[in-house]
Length: 333
Image (cartoon, rainbow, N blue to C red; front, side, top):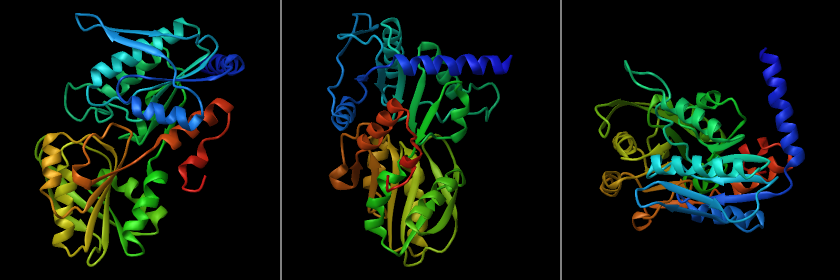
């Protein structure tokens, strides 16, 4: 029975590829600037989709051009107002499906709700799995995302997931800062694998700071494993909102003799508390991040934003052409 299901799904994808004639890139309201940059990279016009709200707040979406037999890529990071952005994406996908798009790919530079990926307390949801189910039910044939909070979320989907990494985009900028005297630091044990991957690409040392979370906004860092004395450190993480983990780790590193401390974060979701905390932490020289989510305030240069539009644009091109995206995991591609 399972083999029959796989055979049917494979046949469906083959038919979709035969029918899909051209790339169409559409943007939700979450990050139109990034969508426009991706369209520019691909050398096409950003598709026309009219999105508005009824007086009671209901979302309405209408494609203002023919999408029949199109290979449609809908770009929408699930950030800032995640519930509104998710619902908007669902409605866009439903409209594209009913307009006979050959294939619908949800491009999620940031996958919201990824932190709720397991039951770590009694009677709590696994919301990342719920979102995966909803995306599939709404009409997604494929998902492109970047730096999931937990790798196992890929397994929550029964459709193909192309999981990209920000490392190839961020590493060249980090290398200029740390030179040959760098140490990549994991701010907690859960970030160790990501930090080790950065360390391999940077040919740098490795250290880990242990932490204990007191509540949703407060973190206490306690111990450091690794030698950072007189070294230039870069703390890596997939996302930050309150900057508590990063700032606590930076203080530990400085107390242990680090020469300078930088941060590299894939998704900068800083709220007002996080911005104030980052500005009031002189131990952190600068945070390097991507434009996977909108970054409206660089805090006077304390935040450096690197665009992932070429990375996503190239992934879209290769997926449409039926080519491998594996080489996008490396710097020289």
